Length: 198
Image 1 (cartoon, rainbow, N blue to C red):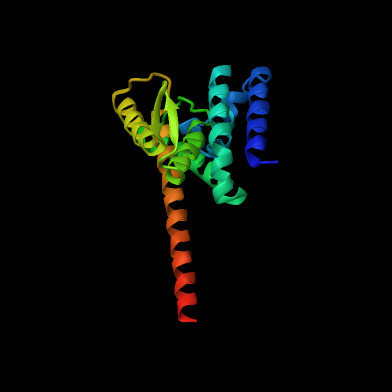
Image 2 (cartoon, helix red, strand yellow):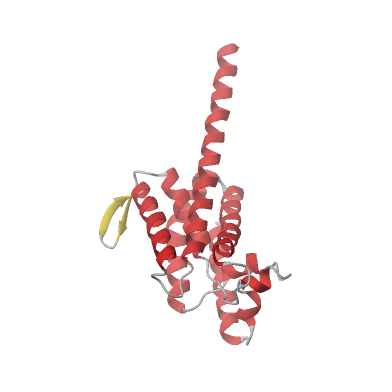
């Protein structure tokens, strides 16, 4: 079974636990003051929590669309590294730009999901994605997402949305994918040079 299905299942279970266990969300969401004060697990657990049914539904829907195509290319191990490393970077980026003393919690898989979307755009830049009924190349969608999250974050246009976390996920996902692509190209070049020498 693809790892994305386990990730979705874990998100659903954690969301149900949020609904039935008092204080569960506060313990495992990313609260800057607490996460930097010793509750380091929040950098990982926050990405399995959500604020509403719509929040988890849209994140898991987008993840199920893009994750299988990305995993086909990078493989299971690198996909998991992409997802979890980008999710952690997303949380750290959020803290970096909002401060470590905040008591406002951050939760949701959006940063990690955005990383998967960014990786998809790097792998399939000309693939058409329909955004608000407009068909756009994946590369254009990635640029628009980066611009939108930057503007929304700078001017605070989306109250209650961690735009800096989204942006951190986009940057981390794109950076990792570009690094792996460059490494693969270098490896192919070395193989070709070796064959030519023989």
